[in-house]
Image (cartoon, rainbow, N blue to C red; front, side):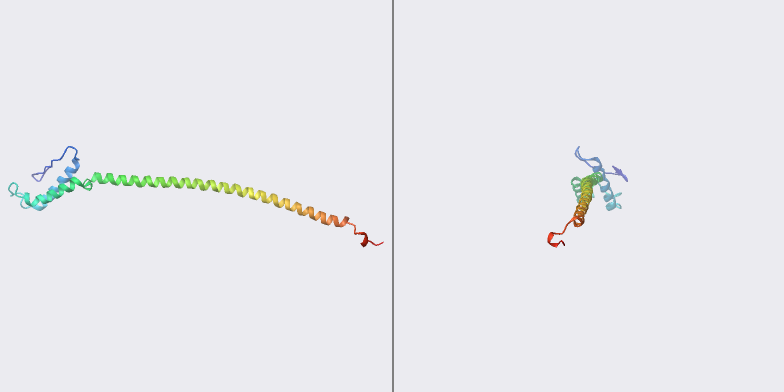
Amino acid sequence: MIQNNLIYLAMTTKDFERRISFAFLEKISGEFESQFAESIATAVAYEMNKRFSKNLSDNMESFSNSVKSDRINVLKGDIEDVKQVMADNIERILERGEKIELLVDKTNDLQEQAVRFKRSGSELRSRMWWGQMKLKLLVFGGAGVHRPPRSLRRG
């Protein structure tokens, strides 16, 4: 990478992601130019090695081992987190749907039982009414036809 007449170069293994390498180079170039802005034009070769080597090694370590240094990997991680949350939410919704179906079934059963109870209550009330009417007819009808015993009769 060439920036402000300086060449920045990073050597990596074949399988190392290029975007991480360029992110590393961008960070190093910014830090290098901010630290040595005034002395870059007059610097002698390798003059800044000792002063910048700690910064360079820290950044190399950070970009080599840290997934956070790669924005795309960070975004991929965020996407995976969102996908997991969505999967959990869908699972909860499906469970809730099953519970709602179960509740609807129980409600239907309860309604059918209420209808049967009402019908049997009406039938029982009717039977009781007829039973009472028969009893009243027997009591009142029998009183009119009933003859008193001989001992109570006159004459």
